[in-house]
Amino acid sequence: MSHFKFYDKRDVLSLTRIRRFETKLGERLQVIADPNALEASLQQSSAAFVLLGIPEDIGVKANMGIGGTDSAWLAFLHSFLNIQSNDFLEGGNILLLGHFDFSDIEKLIESNAHDFDERLAAYRHAVNTIDDEVEQLIHIITQNKKIPIVIGGGHNNSYPCIKGAAKGFYKAGVIPIAQINAINLDAHADFRPMEGRHSGNGFSYAEADGYLEKYFVVGLHENYLPQNVWLDMVNNPFIDCITYEDIFVHEKRTFLQAVGYATTFTDDTICGIELDLDVVENALSSASSPVGITTNHARQYISFAAADSKTAYLHISEGAVQLSDGRMNGSTGKLISYLVSDFVKAVMIS
Image (cartoon, helix red, strand yellow):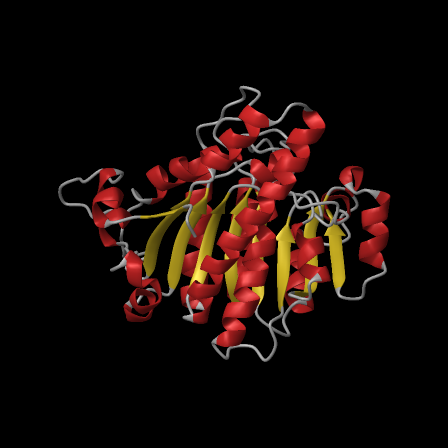
């Protein structure tokens, strides 16, 4: 984990706006006691959740997407740390660990790749490095029976989240085999062929490697579902989905019925909860769309899925404050902070 930066209390308070007569979340969050003794520090911590960031867009670029997903983490922190600490969310059960910084790899690729094909191959190779480091950290967190909250970054990080959580919770004795389920609220299945790692095939690799047992996608857009991916999904009894069109156009199910179907499908073991922000209408992401769910739907999904599942982790991906094509949206960080607070509240109540 050579690319990970651990936070101390000064880092947290530097982003927290202290105000007299009020207590902000940043004043209550825990930090790691000793980065050099990570596992012992996690064991000693009373926190149930471990929050970390993966601000990178290498996986998105490896999928020929628009860069900028490295911009959401800091904006999220500015918002999240300044939430009020109160009876609804006190904050002391969250440990803010830090973030990964893979910018040196990206700079190396950009300065040395000669053409598009060479750059694409280099980015896909670099995702393997990200996979290894993220998986190692998620493994350590989960083997100490903590729930990771991961803010991306590209959706490529679903693979190391699934793999790390499966191995960690297995080592902790929580599950009998190193295999978990996942629910994904997403406009895309991210189940593309294994052509080299990128943001569009994290679940393909997790399933092929045996770490993902059941997988359910809510809100899949029919217009962006490749036929080969569709056939791979419908011919696999451990994968299911409900499309956006079936929920909101044809009204075969309500949104909450769709989420309930997903949690029932995956209720036999612990389950990772995934949300790709490109599913939210007009949210700034690597694949932004004028068609999608509302922010309230996203909050309902997080709250319902977290309360109705045996939760392994939360992963929110693909959000951006500024994309490489110049588009900007300063509210992305605040949206993610709402989703994270909803998740923590739901898990603590359930």
